[in-house]
Structure formats: structure tokens, C-alpha cells
Image 1 (tube, one colour):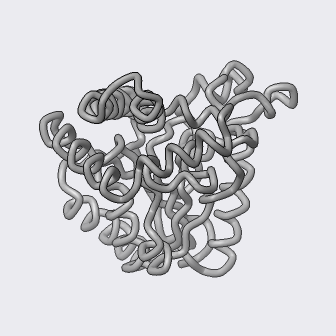
Image 2 (image 1 turned 45 degrees about the horizontal axis):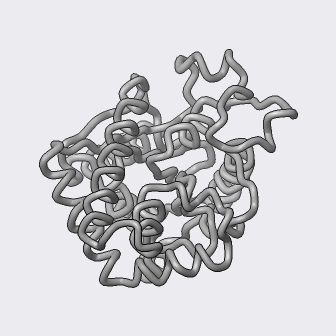
Length: 269
């Protein structure tokens, strides 16, 4: 692919974004940039549903394991990191695939947000220092970008979240939470859905069943907030089926190549 194109895959947690991104990357010789405010932290692998070692061996991933859980990391930091990765991937003739559910991270890259120097080191959830003109306008999306969204019914989403949490527990979620509590007791990561729920379990405040229910409820609420965020973006092409999304991405790529575009992906809202 010629330099300039970008694919972005968005959607709520547990919607299948990672699996689709890996499939697209393997088909089109791409590399993945993870737009997730939690997977940037080293050691936080299970509760964040970080891509597995096998997945990372299959396709190069960027923006994972960037800082320790007690280090600050802002949306401005992410944009700088993502922009650099996109250029590097494109310079090597490959396709960058921006994937995630952190809406502000995604938008900062797609709409080229600018940041106040005074706000760049603030906590990533504090959006007051994002330039209002950038944040308020979703008209000028990044050039030559295809944005794919995955959506699933609430019933299926809840079932996927429940199944994923059970897998997390079996994979050592309790040990990961204890490690975080012991080594980084003041980390803001402890406020995220999984860690917060199982912190209360480990400290004896609630039992395992209640912690699991709380994690499920919090993750489901997160998914609804993510969908609310992404629905405002009129550039997203939504799909209910990952296979249809995959077919659309590959068709856009092939069609653009046939048309002799300088950039292989051209998208209109």
C-alpha cells in the first residue's frame, strides 16, 4: 500500500474488534495500534483484555505496555505515540490499523486534536484542555481513512462480557489484582471496572459472586458509554457482523488499488 491510508476499527468492549483487526492485518499486511487507555500499562494484561502473546506474535502491535501503572499517561501522550507509529508503519509500506474502544483516544488521532501545553500532562479523563475547536468538530476526519464500527445486541454483548470475565478469573485475575494492589496501591487503574470490583473481593468487602456481578455490570455500562460516544461520529460505517465488516474493508482496499489511487483507502461518510 502507498503511504497515507489508515483503517480504524471501533466499538464497545467485547464486540470483537481485536479479532477483526488481526484478520484484516493478516489479509492486508497491516500492523495494529491499540487505542485503549488501560492496555498502555505494563503488567495489566488480564482485566484489560490485552491482546495475547500469540496474537501479538501473529501481527505487530503498537501502544501496548508503554508505562508502569503509577506513571501518568494522557490522551496527548497517546496521540503523539500513535502519530509516530502510523508514520512508521506507512513508511514501511504497510497499513496502520487503529483499534480500540477509548473514544477520546480514537478521536484525537482521527480528527487531529490539538492540546494546550498546560493540559497535556493532566489525567487522560480530563478533556477540558482539548482544543474546543478540535473536540467540537467531527467534520475534518483524517485524510484517506476508513472507519469501521462493530455493534452487537445488548443480549449478546452481556453474554460475551460474562463469558470473558469467567475466562479472566480462570486465567489469574485475582493474582493480577493482588499484584497491582501490592506494587501500585495508588494507581488509577484500580478504579477501572475489573480491578475495582475484585479489589473489593480481595479486601473482603464482597464475595466472589458479587464481584463477578459487579464487574459484569460495570463493563456493560462502559460498553454503553462507548457506543454513545461513537454514535456521534458520522464517518463510521457500522456493521452487525464481523464477516461483513471484513469483506467491506478488503473490498475498499481492492477497489482503491484498481482505481490507481495514490492511497489505497479512500472513504466518505
